[in-house]
Length: 145
Image (cartoon, rainbow, N blue to C red):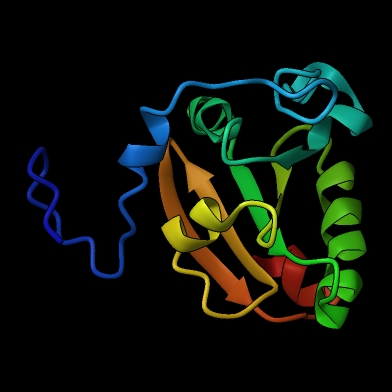
């Protein structure tokens, strides 16, 4: 894929623009509109995202990098990785935020990110996805990324 504005080759890029156009229906207490800004405190740094609230996450990524954790309730490695991600994001105190996506409840997001296995962690920077890693990784590796 080539970016027509810069001519840059974006090998492996994922086009999430169709998700941006979807109207946002914020769910009470679960979306980034509920104190997810960097100044929202530790609880505002980690939030659940749905297919409906994802456009808000794209907008948020224009001001702060968003780490997206694609997970499922039945996934053992996901249960190991999620607390590590939450700990590291909380320690970074607003330099990044963590958006958690349950792939079973939000299949369109899983498909948009081309998630073939979970856990899968992707960053959104200025609305653009940046693959980070797949699978449960040690805390040291999470910190490096």
